Image (cartoon, rainbow, N blue to C red; front, side, top):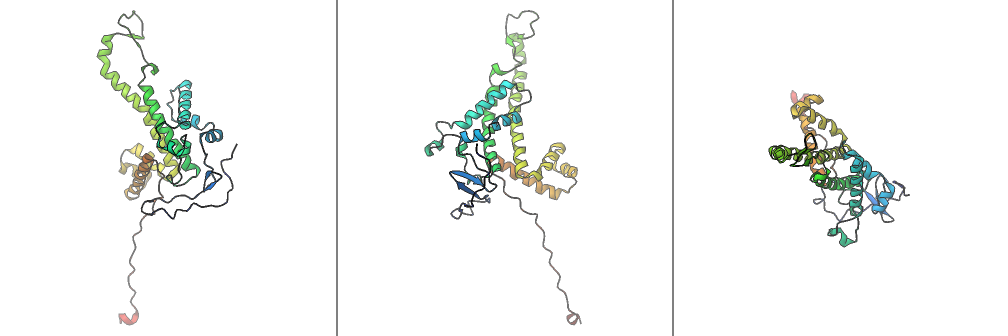
Length: 279
């Protein structure tokens, strides 16, 4: 089994051919050793799915446990885990990457597009791939009537006293309510997974912004959130703009750039008059 980190000689990748205008974010340096990308932190990026699963056998299962609903059964967690493992292991037949001989999702990781090859960059890419597929799986499951635990049978010849059988009149009378409830339930699971994934992204890229996220959630307005944190609105607005920047980077799957330091207004020094001039 290969270790996650290794001592490697420094072989920095040359970025001289990349235009500054087309590359707004600074990339972390990485090296290539024996066909593997190696991040500046020593992390060795798995070459393919088999290597990824060998080194991190519980990664996908743990991810599913963190992002699935608390009411999900063990069978559901197991099914989602196997579906996501299959998704990482097999590219779709019409994927553009197949032209380059790539066969699985892990092989599509490009350190130049993700500004480095350290462990955080790689895991962020894998998490984004898992999130997108998990939303699709969860949405498909919610549309499957057989998967709903609260379903009742439709029986026009209902036997008296059967609590799990309803008539056609009941369905027609409650159709709008049931549809709204189904739509809300279908949206709840993916939304929770999306929010949790975004918070993980913020925790990795800019942990100092997390208190502002919690304050906004509790206070609902920027002014009240600034008061809750005990700061004025000016520095809170800067933090809020940083949070918006993180949101944009999360949606397009890019790492967050470094935050600029606060602007300090220069104070013009007054000229000192000599005694001779004053006289």
